[in-house]
Amino acid sequence: MFMIEMASGTDSSTTVDKEARRLYERYQSAENDEERHEIALEMGELDGRRHADIYAALETE
Image 1 (spheres, rainbow, N blue to C red):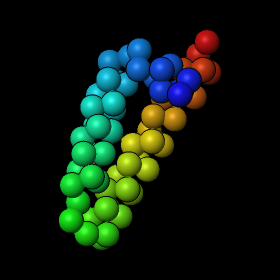
Image 2: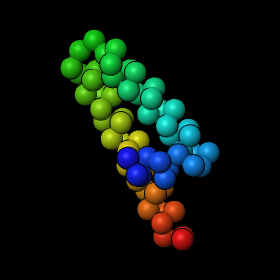
Image 3: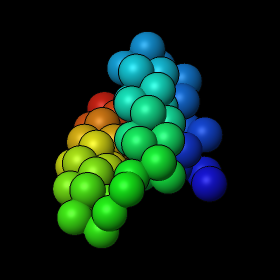
């Protein structure tokens, strides 16, 4: 929870949050396991970008 709050303070994080919500909605409406798997992979990539942004911000403090 802490990381989500920390990341939500920047404009790029807002975009990431919107993309995460969009992916979650797509995942919920997916019609089969293959589609859910593909969306889960996209979610993983997005999560990796979010973590990279957080670590970069920590390094500049």
